Length: 150
Length: 461
Ligand code: HEM
Ligand SMILES: [Fe+2]
Image (tube, rainbow over all chains, first blue to last red):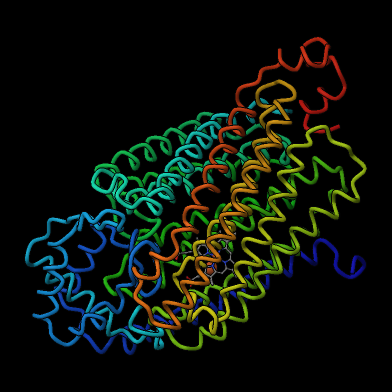
């Protein structure tokens, strides 16, 4: 190997190959971006409520306890399919109401059980959050998670 | 130490060690919350604890890289750093930003994407600091001797700084948000940071083993080539279930499997260099950390990464304690241990003293490495049970978690060992003074007094 593969050859392979893979990655990224916009998330419209909900989700850093589509912290349940689990996926009013009373009942204060903080949310914020979670639940995630337990 | 401007590294390393202490202490609190969930639940909820733990980690690793670059580049380029003042300004910005972030997290002020929670002004501060840094090292490198070590280091640092720009892009569409989020997270740890790691490891091997530079540099180019050839498309292993096209399942599985190669090569490289090397460098602790880093990185990133990277496996294990197990050992082996190797190597020179307590330092290596390994094992067991009960059987998340308590207790114990190791490490590099050495060795203060000591001060012989 040492005869053929000199240092400068190795360097050139590194440069050329990296550019090649960056190029492929860029093309696939564009394709994926379009796929998200036109296909996997196209089933549910990205309304102002959904956008507000994403903002609420971020403001309270829910991701640092829960997972969403399997990403985040592993301290609390998956919420990418919580609307399915609660059986309210296609009923916006019921969804907001169920989520609202869940949020109100936290923290449970039960000894020895993981605690979720109380977040002071307005009615619009709760509605946004439930719309955001319904929207996420409708994303085509290649059939993940395997079951409703999330 | 050959160049006086290398001294700036000292300030970076001290700041990094301070954050390292915060990171592991807060981590221990998080571990305790898993055991006793009502602990601090109103004052400091788990999400804030975790944010502090992960952010402190990433920032101190970056501070360590910056410091390492300021230490290595003068020696490689054979000239002083372009501007020492800029280097200190950069550090000041980073420290103010970090402290600002810590305080604002405690008061519940943060953005909301995992690892990117820094308030906007802190993100901008990081960007400004990175630009100052890039300017400063690029000027130094351009005017000096060019080596493969500096070349790869500078490419890695430029690329990771450019990727930071994606931290500012947060689309309203969650799936797009996630897709670009991984540009920062995955393309850092499984791309650009590997370049930084390889070059630092190369530098340490050069100094510690005395193997020919030509040999080391050829290895380096092969290592970083395999890192990027696999790691870029390997991003696909995060694109399976977040709303992206199905073809990522094949691309991600194949290329992320190949990601094991650069980690295997870095481990092989380190051991081969030590076997080939004629030099018997007195800084044994630095060698231990270097070899340890390459080895644990292979297991944490390579083996534990491969464990759940095939899409058929990941379908079940995604987002469970298996992920947590891997994340911990990969970060520790590849980046924590590597930074501690650099600190161990450079600190004696930066402080102008000799043996810093090698026994305590090496003890801290075994405590931390043992603790992290044990933590990884118990989390892997917990994750295996979780995957089966929750993902296969379909039992409710909280019900399953309640049955994993015994593993979380053991994880807490492992974490306590790591914290103890970290404290010993910090003590061993910062506190013992040269008088100590003088006493035990029975010779006069080090400088020029004894060839061993002199060799350490000069970074080799
Ligand atoms: C030093 C290098 C690496 C570090 C620091 C690292 C760290 C991490 C971290 C922190 C996560 C969790 C991210 C989150 O919060 O969602 C993660 C996820 C993951 N890593 Fe790595 N990793 C490294 C290398 C690798 C390698 C080489 C592989 C494959 C061979 C790999 C495979 C994975 C996979 C498949 C996931 C997703 C797990 C899931 O689906 O939940 N990693 N990594
Ligand atoms: Fe990854």
